[in-house]
Length: 104
Image (cartoon, rainbow, N blue to C red; front, side, top):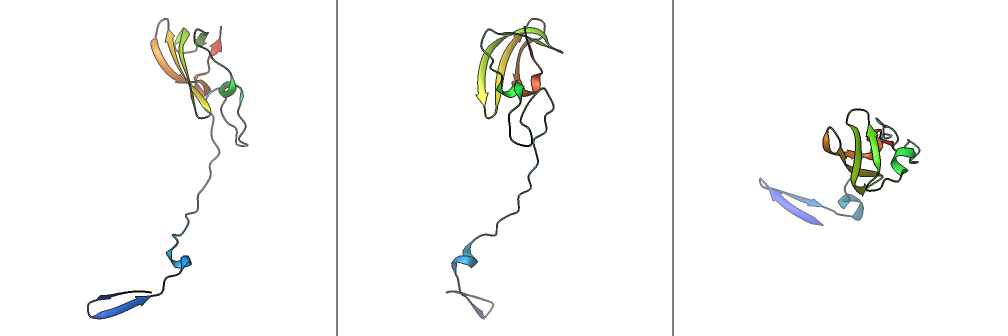
């Protein structure tokens, strides 16, 4: 039991485990949307681009950046961060799922 007073009035409140627990928020779920080549489908299964194995030294082509060579590969969650040195565009960091890369 807790009590407090305010403005000359006394208040008492019985506490139980149920009254102390915070209300749970209702969470909405949105299925991931893939903008590029691959990703995770609404059923939670990985598609080709996100599971494809990339390695340092792989030659790749990108529609906007042209041809390049992978400098580093870093797994990030269900995706892979690739650092690529493109012949004309310089060094870029792209996510494998969205980059639409073609292995040469």
